[in-house]
Amino acid sequence: MAPRFFREIKQAFEELDEDDGVRVAIIRSEGPVFSAGLDLKEAGSILLGDGSGGGSDRTKRSPAVANEAQYRVIRELQNCFTQIERCRKPVIAAVQGKCVGGGVDLISACDIRLCAADASFSIFEAKVAIVADVGTLQRITPIVGKGMAREMAYTARFIPADRALACGLVNEIHTNPEALLAAARLMADEIAENSPLAVQGTKLVLGYSDEHTTDEGLEFVAQWNASRLRSNDLNEAMTAFLEKRPPKFTGD
Image (tube, rainbow, N blue to C red; front, top):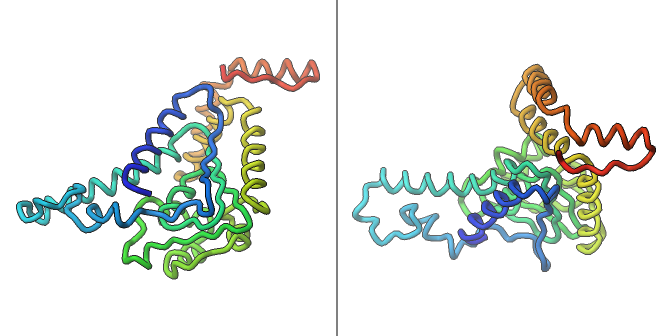
């Protein structure tokens, strides 16, 4: 993951969010590794420089100014992956091979994670003297639980696919990358067949409820449905039920 990667993925999910023709997204990679994480060589100037990606004028700037610049860089990198979570469309991560460091930041921002049998996962940052700062530590505990989250973050060990399934990091394991991609596409098709208004509203309500009390979540979903329930998709669902046929939702 070079610095450019973060900007590009943010832009991609901004576009996906706005594209009404897209109902689901899949994040995958080609080759033996899902992600080796941050490109330390290319990102070195950000990690060790003045936070602006340069560093030639470090001596001209106070530590306070340099630290502020680095803080802004970190926040921008965080925002790039938060855009995945913020996207209205459900996002499925399909992981094969190693998923390291920034790779875990990436998939923890997704809605659903599937993997191949050869997958393994590492919150690797402690091995390179960094506190993971692009989203893993904020998102991983609700996914895998406190004990597992701390084990992964403190040890930086690689967690194999079977343990990832057992702790809830992934929903399913598939035999190889080809079967993994087929399963991800099948799940995406199942989601895409449902009303996009309902699916996107469900994602928003789930996200809100994760960060609020039960009563606040109930109030939020009541207001959501009260303002959006009378849709053409709902009429289509009822008509299709009466006519004993599959509904064809348009998102209206």
